[in-house]
Amino acid sequence: MTIASALSEFGAQHWVIGGIAASLAWFLAGQQSFSNKKLDAAIAWQCVAVIIILALCGWAAVKGEWLGFIVAAGVLYIEVRSIRSILVMQRQRQPRDM
Image 1 (cartoon, rainbow, N blue to C red):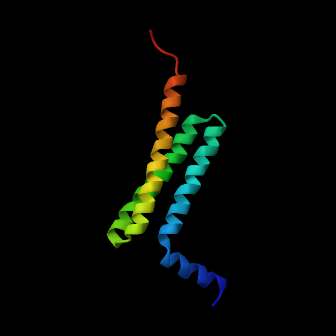
Image 2 (cartoon, rainbow, N blue to C red):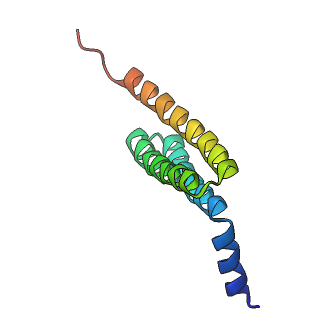
Image 3 (spheres, one colour):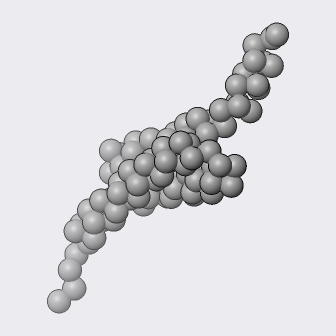
């Protein structure tokens, strides 16, 4: 068995891990943008992460992977909370109209 076929087999059996890793990679890209004070870019990166994890949650539910669904739902919760906190910060930075 070659390394490529072993990785392919692992990915086919553990697709939930790959989906969560992909979502977290986009999420971390958003966190990097946030630390560079680019709030709009941070929200965009993290919205992509949320879309990925939502698709993963749906697919896990269809496949009956309930543990994967629960973990993905937890990741979704964390990502949405992060986006909400960025939006709150962005609203606070905007000048208020009088």
